[in-house]
Structures are given as structure tokens and as C-alpha cells.
Length: 72
Image: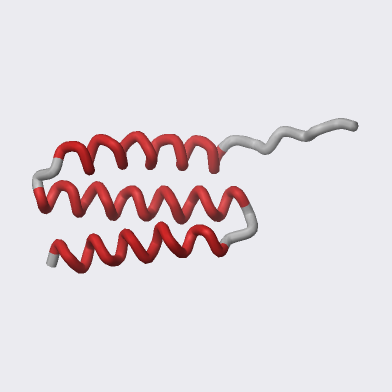
């Protein structure tokens, strides 16, 4: 079962590169990070869990913030 979660996380992360919208890319990366967290829990792999908690939080916050308007 854990192998399937790992492969699903890999597929979700890889698919994020096909999104043109930065917000969509970060949302998909956040979902992939959550899947990696689940995978890490199944394997009891603390480095996988810790690194993906950081990635998920950063992806969620960066997807939620309003884009800056560059004047020029």
C-alpha cells in the first residue's frame, strides 16, 4: 500500500510542472507534499515527513497570497 502512495505522490508532483498558473502549480505541489507526508508516516521516515511538512506549508501560503503587481 505504501508503494502506491509513494507513486501517487510522485505523479502528483511531476504533473505540477504542466500547470501554467503559479497558484495551480503550488496547490498541486501542496497536495503532493501531503501525499509524501502520508508515505513518510507509513514508512516511519521522519526526514520525509519533516521536509514535506515544510514544503506543504510553503506551497499553501504562497498559493494563498495575492500576487504582487509590478508597475512599470
